[in-house]
Amino acid sequence: MKKFINAPESYVDDMLTGLVMAHPDIVRKGKQGRTLARCGGVPKGRVGIATGGGAGHLPLFAGYLGEGFADSCAVGNVFEGPNLQSCVDAINLADGGSGVLLLYGNYGGDRMNFDMASKLAAINDIETVLATDDIASASREEMSQRRGVAGIVFAYKAAGAAARTGASLKDVADIARRTVARTRTIGLGMKSCRLPGATDEISELRDDEVELGLGIHGEPGLWRRPMASADALVDEMIGRLLEEGPDDMEHRRLAVMVNGLGATPLEELYIAFRRAGNVLTERGLDVVMPLVGAFATSMEMAGLSVTLCFLDDELEKLLSAQANCPFWSVQ
Image (cartoon, rainbow, N blue to C red; front, side, top):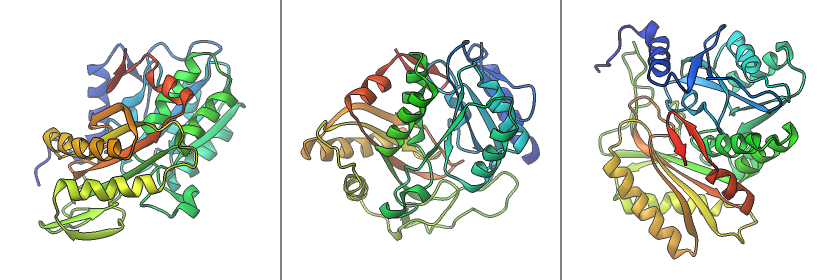
């Protein structure tokens, strides 16, 4: 399979250089490790937000740096967690003097290096929140074991908005935890992807086959079946997400993200959103924040994910607050 690259070993650094060059008013490179930070740094006295993860998922993770989002990001190789030095640098870059929130996906390598980095960084006041929105990756009884996928974007936005108000580290972390607790995602894979320099796909799917719950690194999903209609597939995805909804549902207002995994045309994402919106409306739910596009990808994987964030009054206000990063602007 052809890839538009120079060499596999320069793939990540070439990408990051291009990202910074394209958005010089928003992001800059860090001084140590493989890190990015938002331009201007964290204002003095404000809580900073550091994140990180493997490359191959842009806009996740490095694309969500900016005013009202995260402040720094450690970047690993493709589908690999960032190294220890990058994690330390990301934490230090997010220091505005009022503590740092570490907000990243629930993956073993990321946890290990960020845990060690939090002990080595020149900051004592650190809190950690892990995104765990992928309902296909573990049962509801084992929610803490679930992986973090596209739903982390809502946590970036809510926590970033809270930090802008001057909220304390504890309050910013509590907002991030509440957002994670009220966010659910499920993915659907139609074709897998191939890492730069690799000869085989990370997961093989037949041409007539789809996989519900396929992970963004090729982790096995819930089932593989013959391809069905878009409406039938979205119906099952929405049904599973609603079954996982929080007990507190009196607000009945949702932020809904239909996210392309890399190779799915926008036209097909809007077909999916059409069905999702209709089903949710029929269930008496209001879609007040619709998002359709590429928010968390997996190289050239074909497929999509659907994320529901079950809003309360405060989360709706925070998600609607003004913010700007390279891939999502709220005016």
